[in-house]
Image 1 (cartoon, rainbow, N blue to C red):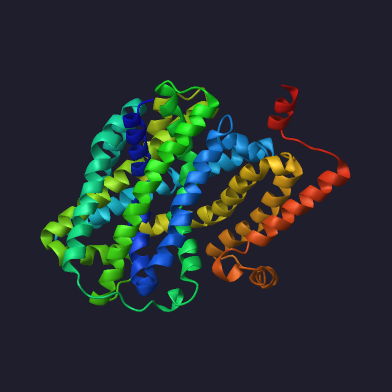
Image 2 (tube, one colour):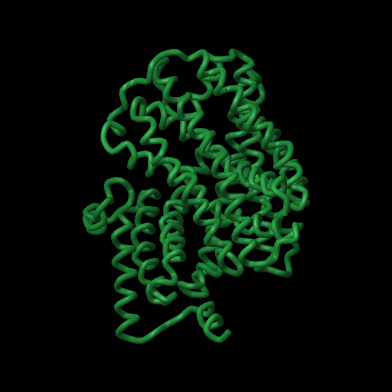
Length: 445
């Protein structure tokens, strides 16, 4: 594969990752971190860029991607977990959220006092939006051309123009960090990086990248891994540069007022820097970012579900994903977040532990009990965290969970994951080897 193709596939991957959350969180981090910006953004990049790249690499190392990784715990877990991940970041949350943000930032600011209700405007916008998503998703082989060659460069150029103008016009010095960033700003940025949810997205995008590479004639396993890493590095470098740029923009904006979220901050920055032209430019940025992510997620869902349910063609799955996403998008952004975020809270720790175990696989011989023990205790903690977000709390459990190490920063599952893995390893030594189907096949060959 030519270097130019690697670049375009990498840019396509960047555009798939770069959605609403990727735009909102870095500038808000910058505003809070102030003079502690650099350690905070480095921590953010470690989890918002480094972790997704590790996920992509892990998926390229195994046959059938995330399904195989999940099956190391148990075959049923592999299927159920993967389906939940795809549905959560696809039609049940990720796609509708991006469509709503595209509406809120790409169209709504320019409507003024239009007499038509917000719900009708959203319906009209999402009709056109999802029609375009559907048409582009029907031809995944063309996505590299459309997104890598045209859409992504336009998106990057728009961000460069906004940030460059901001650095020239915003002259106030960086402010002192807020309370959250006054101590351990690196660690705070590390936690903030989870908010992008790109580690979950990487589970879905892995199959898209591997399929794209195979279409370009890359079939050898080592080459697939090599080119996956190279395209991931292209996407990761672009993501890191954009995070630094819009993060610094947020840090500079702290001297011009306080803002409730990254959306309000960027909107004020664009207007302050470029006036009405800034609002238009920001609308273009948000719309393109959200659109490309929706296309990427739709393709990923289409390829995955058409593979595990052969009776449903790729076109049928893409149609269903688009229709369901369209319907849920019209519930409104607040309702989508209220219903769906708990599922992501439950899935994210499990993803991190599964990928970590994948890289440690050789050190414990791929023992299924290690996978099962680590994932079981992780799942119990993350399940309770998710139920809490639904308003379900139990005083006894709450007392136990709140005393877990790192629970105060949302990482209460870390120590249980380690303990579960060690317990699994002890059982492995006492009861004899137990291997996943994947390991048994490797030993037979």
